[in-house]
Length: 271
Image (cartoon, rainbow, N blue to C red; front, side, top):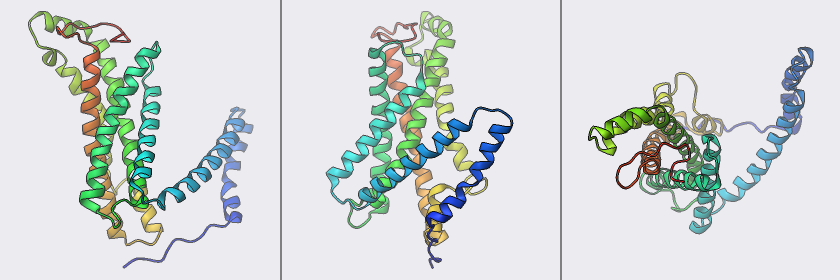
């Protein structure tokens, strides 16, 4: 049985809710932290962005055209790959950035695309099948986590390759294959990229209530139904992290080796 719906929040209540920000402004002024301007800009910018997103989501949730929804999700994936690219750092030229942008997009597209499709069309199966109010939020949560996994995996893999360059070259000189030489590097990188998703599952419902579950409960949904949806999302996030990590690391590895399994010791490999 669903509980009563969430209460409406008036503009007056929003204004009252903004008052605690004054505490942060006061502390910044008192201790000369020079954070007042960034805080005010952040509040204004965040408000404008969220209001704009709210209207966009209102439009998106009403969509049932598969082409529109597919285009929207592809745009989200493109934005996610660009954001992940910025987290890598150390890319000295546009050619390298294009290569890694493609790797990140391909990993996010495959990982998030497969899990979103499975969740939407095999597990949940809404009516109609293409419905924005289901597909867009699901895709948003999974693509966001795919972005994090891709960025973590590639960044850690590049770092480990630089640290273990001598070890890798020695193994190759002793007759090891490319896969054998980078096995430890892949294991460490994949573990680092998968760790956030695993930690989320470990503390699920203990440390904090996840956002989707809390939102459904506030909207009046039964807590048990909200739990089912949240579990499906968390399972999908873990699966996405695994796929994205594997794809991104495998594609990055190819940039560091020639066709003859020679290791390329450069920061912008493949240039």
